[in-house]
Amino acid sequence: MAELRYFDADANLDEVVACVKSDGACVMTGVLDPEQVAALKAELAPWVDASPGGRDGFTGFKTSRTGALVARSPLCREVVMHARVMEMANSFLAPWTNRIQLHLTQVIRLMPGQGAQPLHRDRLAWGGYIPAEIEPQFNTIWALTDFTEENGATRVIPGSVRWPADRRASLPEKTQAVMPAGSVLLYSGSVIHGGGENRSDTDRWGLNITYTLGWLRTEENQYLSCPPEIAKDLDPDLQELLGYTMGNYALGYYSDPRQVLAATDTLPPELALGRKPRQRLDGTPLISGDAF
Ligand SMILES: O=C(O)CCC(=O)C(=O)O
Ligand SMILES: [Fe+2]
Image (cartoon, rainbow, N blue to C red; front, side, top):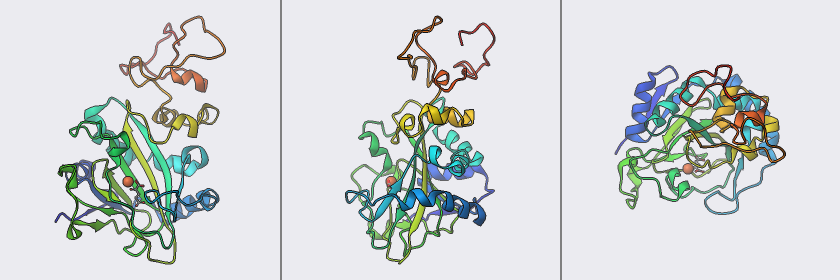
């Protein structure tokens, strides 16, 4: 049985990414310090406290899920854009895309009494249409409380990325991502995993931030969770991660419903945020004389 591997926050990123590829998951400890965790929890608390439990066995009746975290939480923006995690997400997904995008942001709060979530692969969000050789997703769950066996630390089956779709895990193959607050569980869309059972008397808070290929539909609709009137004030790198940039030559343009601009009616999304694209699609900088 494969063990879940643990790395320090300053570990070599190629090694960590190689582990996510081979095992499907690993943990980095000590990435956020206690003050950062406390500040994140304080900023998120009003939204999390107001969020109701789930509506079915998968989302969990005693699990609340709180999204739109880029719009709602300035501190979450920093976690979304965490330089080392972004580097790993880009490296992991690079074989299948020229840019990545933000797939979802969600605080997953397991409340006392929440049973274990059914085991699953997150890539099934796309209904099983993506060929097995493509990895569509790089996932993170940041521990905002300690993750313990008792409070429902995420269950993971290291090595299950290479299993046939119908193979089920036996008990000894299951492990839990037990980790102190401030750690992050990194896992691929292909690994079998699920929330654990919360047998404790306190909440387990996980900050789930996931990245996907630039040409796939995202689980959280970022244009609705973070519409242009909010996105216009964000850092350009974050705007582009949300999808406010062309994904390819013709992918992601819009037309202004109120007017036709003289230059063209197929517009790059940056214009909806009040700025021009920063570069052409081939990565070269814009020069004066370009249409925008
Ligand atoms: O909460 C967790 O530990 C995992 C949740 C999960 O896998 C999901 O909701 O897809
Ligand atoms: Fe999942």
